[in-house]
Image (cartoon, rainbow, N blue to C red; front, side):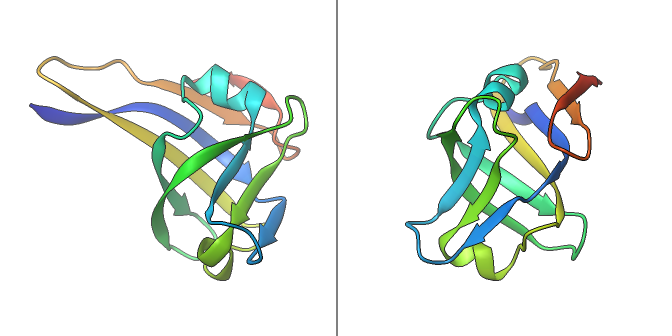
Length: 113
């Protein structure tokens, strides 16, 4: 078995960083669905603004909100306004064709890559 990229949200902007919350990443439900993620799924988040990476899990936010929220300890590493990439992986014997979405500056879906 190998681990392959399965889902990716590219060029998301963090809209909220709140340390007073049980840790996770909040993502607009529409974006979760378009990228093929699931609520509660473990993800790797890479911050293009500071180079940090962390693992956490998804909490769905209101559909259409454009919300990308870093909660708990992650909000000390990744701040409001930072550009991030959110990635999900899959164990498989075969190649996996990833579903990759690109966002605009307001975290709205632009296109599949």
